[in-house]
Image (cartoon, rainbow, N blue to C red):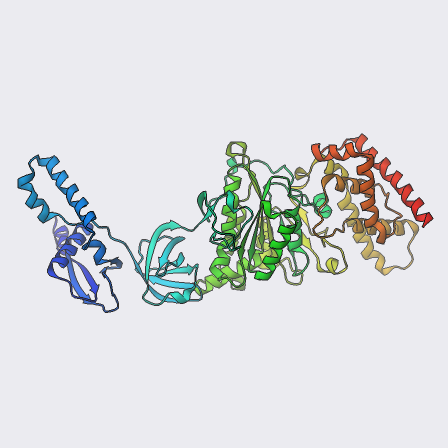
Length: 598
């Protein structure tokens, strides 16, 4: 042994025993043996009087702190002590064979087995944040338990302390409270019984319908599926909204952003999409982040009224909930979606909205004393949403073929899509539906801006019937809007230009749609074919909606097999398209005759 090794071996570990009452020599000796066994070195153990510790004691060994209940360790129940002693005697007999000479020695050397439990002490608490010392082995994202059963999650690792966000009332926690690590990451229960229920961000039911039996417990943070585990997005996820399905189709596994100013109909689009999934074997999850509890209750009632709660789950972290609950809510909803997706089901998940989610995360980060960046958001705010939205996918057949389609919602200020959070999420998603305030207040609802909206999946997510019927509608609407702006400066227009403007106005009227009235595929195909063939050209703008409704009823009656074929196959042959045109012209003649007799 070298001189240096010899000197190191002589160094004792300094430990302190903190308790209200002075321990006996026998207790000190036993604790010292346990410490020496754990650390493999000699330990110097000193007692420190600590009146606030009513039961048990605390061991402080360097930066490690261990909490012990004396009753659990030394005043074990009779049955537990008897069981441990029997095991020790049985082990001695196995080795030696003669129990009498060894009995006395075994009893003298026997000591109850116990394990160290690392604990922390609360240094400060407030605003849903607790700083804790004495947890050197805790990991980022680990769940810790505070006195009173309140859970927290480690979100900041410092040399002297860790920062935890709290999933409960921080008024029940005080300085000096005990904190215990669990070794587990944050998770949420999942199962089929969650369908039709309203839960909070921790999976606890809040609809007053009793407890939910969980079939699994899933981590809220989970890696996104790899490229090998995915397949192309090519199956449509119909919204039932003509303006979107015709021009900006959404596919199963896609992430399509809904973006616009406050009160422009963003939630209405998501809600209509959920209603349109009735009977299509799609599980819908709506995550409410930072909304008023009354708004969430109204939305749940709307879903129930239209029969959509039968296949929907609502995860609510309202404005009255703490920032930690608002932060974790979308990840909890995504974990629920993954439960069904990994079992081969199709899932639609709505995050309403991620602007409030980013604000909640900013509040947490500032309270945890992280360095603020642009607009005071932390540097990892992009990763905050990318790791959430990347989990949406269309899984390969080897993985079950399930899918999860995400509709994140983002609120803009004065239509500024170049702001920090909107540009972040635009770059993450596969397209965006931009809702314009001017269109909304002019009565164009849904108020979709054709120029700024886009779907990067495009026609791959459309059925052939829809693709054929939609044709060049986007191009014609773009030409109309350009012509409309140009003609504002001219009062003398030729007949061709006037006719083009009337046609464009008719298309805009055609795209108007009442809320809670999603359209079936054959209805959309009939309207598109008729409109793009200029059959509605001479119908006054105020009568176009009534003309459409009666046209659909007429075609459904006269061409029932045609409508059934479109719904079942998603195909539209040239002959069938011509049949729609013929039926539409026949209905136009009937319409004009009725108009003349009025």
